[in-house]
Structures are given as C-alpha cells and as structure tokens.
Length: 161
Image (cartoon, rainbow, N blue to C red; front, top):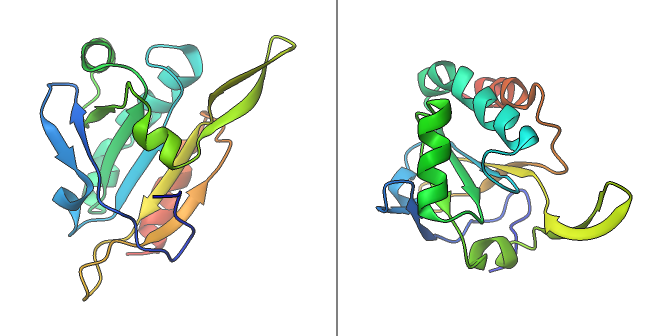
C-alpha cells in the first residue's frame, strides 16, 4: 500500500503498541486519527514532538481525535519513551519498517553535513470512516518541525469538526 494522498482511503494496518498489544487503524474508525511518524524515540526532536502531543492531548481528545505515534523503535523502546515522558496515547512499533517503507517515509536527510537515509517526520490526519466505512486521508504534514506542531494539528482538527 503506497502512502495515501489527500482524499484517498487509507488501508488498515496493525502494529504493536508500547504494551505489546495489537492496534489497528480500523479500531478508531469513528474518530479522526492523528498518525505521526517520528524517526527515533527519546531523541531531541522526537521528544519535543511527542511531548507537544502530550501537552495538547486533552484538547485533542475533547475534539474527538485519536493520537497514534509510530517509529521504527521496538516495543520495549516505545514503552520506555512513553513512561519517561508520561505519553498518554499509543506509541506503535514498526521495527521492521514495514509500514514506514510502504508509506515511503525513508528519505535522504542531512545530518551534521553528511547525507544519510532516515524516517522523515510526517503526520497524517485521517477522517472518521465515511458511510462506506472508508477512512480517508484529510491532511498530510511533511518534513514536520516539532515545535508547535501539535497545536497546528489541533487547529486543523477543530476546523474540521
């Protein structure tokens, strides 16, 4: 399944959360879903982004939204990250990078002057299922800057209630 474009139906997927439990996109068909991909747990930018969603979580929940973070970290690393920063939403583990690769999120990045490949920080906002049961992509944020991103997503969710 290639990365969806705005308006496309998003294929269901299942990954393990930080507690080792299966979580599927379809579990949240009745709600808008904020799916944020981040490069690595407990790194500076990823911590800023994850804590931003933590700090706006109550407002996102009040707006009816679900937050799911995804990285290539394993379940144990996701758990440690969630506990360390008191993250109240599921962190999904994609250590084999199946979903990350399918959505074409591995991109060239400049790291300290050296070109490397890594997961591009990207957020997808998925609308609740339509009358045909399809969850469609509402918005894509590419090359996300962590500072203030959660508030930006909250504004989008509130504007589309």
